[in-house]
Image (cartoon, rainbow, N blue to C red; front, top):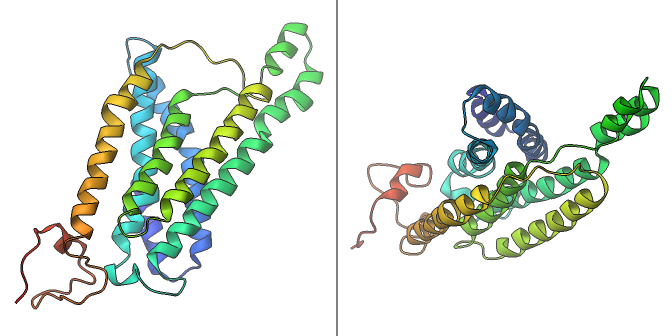
Length: 253
């Protein structure tokens, strides 16, 4: 997990086609819940609700760091408004496309569920084992909530400088809604009843934090607009220094 962000930064700075980087980000976002579930099994929780909330926090933090923070940090401000494929907005579009296409295709294929139903189930020795193999893939609400939070935060984080990203986020959420509906009806097994803790935590904690982050990014973007490089700092290069944008706006004479 520590080497994963370093590897992403190295790939981006090494000049590799960003489509491969976006595919890597999408696949890592899809595979990390398996690691998070293993970690949560080693932890002690009062009940399954607390375990799901802990799983939600882990997956959401990883996906936000992987899809938003790293891409935003490693790219200089001057790349935001470029007109070629090195633009940060173009890379954002590539990430959205990879997340929508890869996640939807992987979920629709349901490789593990189809393998259990069509390969393992007919070869079971008892009726009970065959019925267990025919149950379908397990569903974790923490995984589905974190996927929604990822698209929501990606959309509102970049909306101050590129409002069209809100439509990309809307399309991603609609696609996930219908894909999840199909999976619930066709491929996933019945989920256990875990109460309302995860929904309450998302509504009362995560969504307000996302709105505060959007307000912070809007405050950082609109007063100064650090993407055109018109007001460069004398002592430091503001086009490449991300930390300089966190200072309060100052009058330039």
